[in-house]
Image 1 (cartoon, rainbow, N blue to C red):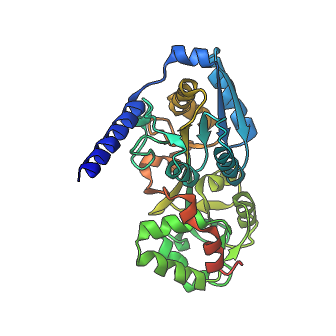
Image 2: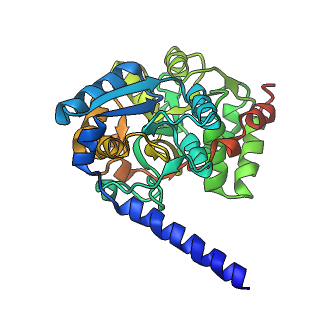
Length: 332
């Protein structure tokens, strides 16, 4: 009993220390001495260039550099570095399932930015380990030349109608995040039942949401499960496309987080604060992202997060099971 009590006291002290770190703002004088920040990112290189340039304009005493790779290669790089006891990066911005895996592996430090209050519930970690920057919203998109507005699906269950069977619905073979989010949102009984019926519809698969949008616009198929913002962009260019405001709308976040072994922790905190600020969110909007910050004007009113029934997919990468998704739909 004494040992258990001592262990509980120790764990309480550790938790209090973590909370203290979480509450600490960036120390600007310490950041000046650190003089640099390295962030790992999975976004486009030109976007990372803009973010680092804007940050250095605001904080000219800090050199911002980055390493960019796709989500999966970047995740593997971080894991490899951790195993080799290499601690190179200060900040990482990557899709939420990977961020959550990094938290579970104790590779992130808690840091509650002063800007976190501008973000909605479910779009920041309650323990302070990450905050969202921008999102990808899943929806049903359709070709307006093939599907009259009155006949278009209005809810996910409408995809199960016989008229959309046998290749009428297109999906990306990497929709395991949508799959997991939908099962979580619909519930342990209704979710799997929906997916079983959707599988019987015999959807077709094409890799890449940009390609899916182009093929949908060309009339290769009438419906697709894809990103709302991609559809909105093609629609703005004159493509005969429309998308559905649907409930629930799974949202894939792109959070930002501080490394647990950051070589430049104060510079890292300043960088996180900048990205989460209104200036940072507006810069993301200029890059055609959907900022998660709620007090920033949306890219379009239809993509206003305040008016959508969003369901953030906060599930670790290990639990998304991409091979299980592919096997379920007969892709392997």
